[in-house]
Length: 148
Image 1 (tube, helix red, strand yellow):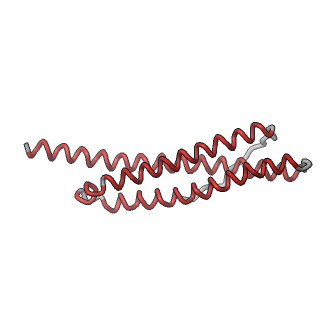
Image 2 (spheres, rainbow, N blue to C red):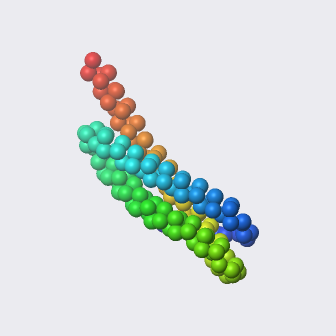
Image 3 (cartoon, rainbow, N blue to C red):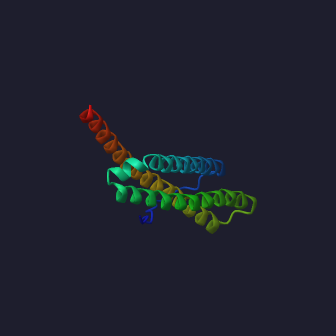
């Protein structure tokens, strides 16, 4: 999935504490997202036999591939966010230069936008995976009722 370039309105320079807290919060959310992806991957592996028997292997493979791509992209984003957080420290240690502040601000909001896009992609994948598993569980329950 391609991420669109964000349309940024005029954004005021926030104080360093707010920017730092914002970065810490986003890093925490991204780390949680990584945990969610691992959970979803494990869930998919756990239901592999049902997926194969219900002939939903292509759908499951697509979801697994999308989860893997998302995990790689989010890992890169996490590294970028951590470097960005460290750059704030460097920016504050030096004398303030207007173009550096603008570049930092643009990068800050681009990273936040990217994190939001990945969160949306994860929600879509979760819905697809849960729908697939829900459908399989319903079929299995119907099969058990019919065999009794």
